[in-house]
Amino acid sequence: MRFMILGLIVATTGCASSTGVLPFGKDTYTLNTTVHFTRGGPSGAKTSGLQEASAHCVKLGKYMLPVSTESGRYGEYATYDVVFRCLSEDDPDNIRPDWQRSPDVVIENRQ
Image (cartoon, rainbow, N blue to C red; front, side):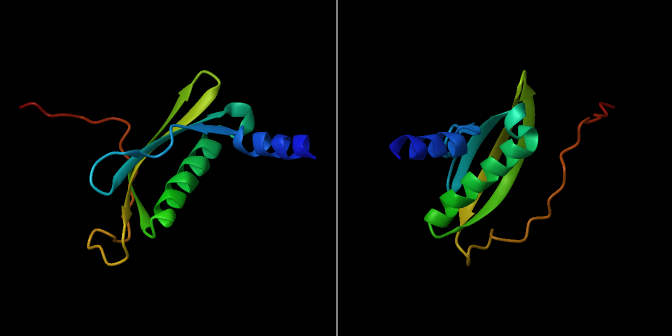
């Protein structure tokens, strides 16, 4: 029975690895998750990262507000970085996010 429980823990946590939530300023945190492509790839990394970030804020009795995200690929692994804030319900910064994807290319005019 003990081996079944250990196997279940490994199966559910072995899909993604994480840096854990790290402080990144006032009410702001960062988190990186990595998932092998055979275990969920980019969507698995994103899901795991956002769930962990949200769970951290819920544990503090607050709401999670993403500040920035970035996805990447390193060999056979997908990564997802998220910077987020944990805000109380009445915090003036706790607003509905107007999420826009960051541009892939930035053109700079130097005239």
